[in-house]
Length: 141
Length: 140
Image (cartoon, rainbow over the protein chains, first blue to last red):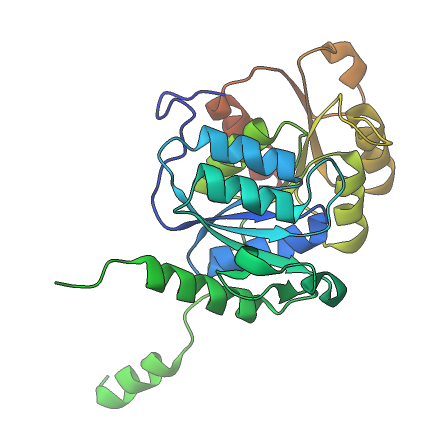
């Protein structure tokens, strides 16, 4: 779907967050909240869709991925997080899932912070995104 | 007219901007959905994104009605675009419908949709069509 203005590449105008969740109402609510907070939000309904978005994002515009853990399909949120860490190490990943799955999120998957318990408060997501993006900015000279 | 009047004017709340028209996109191909949603948001529409007919029904059952539904025809799940459009025509007659398809012809959309676009479509064309459809609602 090319337009004269771009060749399908994702153009960075502001920080871009990729929200990955198989529940449309969850995507809708957190997506609208983050857009109101000034972020550009891309929504994906599965890990496979998220991977297509990341592969299309040649410039590395997506800076944060918020992903549900439990999603139908071959890959869950853990698998997606590992794929992103290998493919785009500069991209921050926030995992969100039921408290029971939090015990599974051990080791280096939690380097970027503990897994968010669902249902999450949008403010909690916002705070985590802001903290991750602040930490990744180079310090002023 | 003095400072008192000016001060009173400053207390008046600013008129709220007119609400943006809401478009529900139903498209299973993520890159198409992403680009269409982006184009519509840049054109100042509020956009809800559904990856298939079942997700669209979840939205329609739980949220205030959008102004326009754009739906692909062939999608995974229990309901295709034609069936979704038929449901909307019955249950939500005020909702404008655009059907898009790379396979089906426009004949299947007769009576179900306000517009039909063959895929691949130009984003500017679909944005223009939605503007026309929503403008009809604004005009008295």
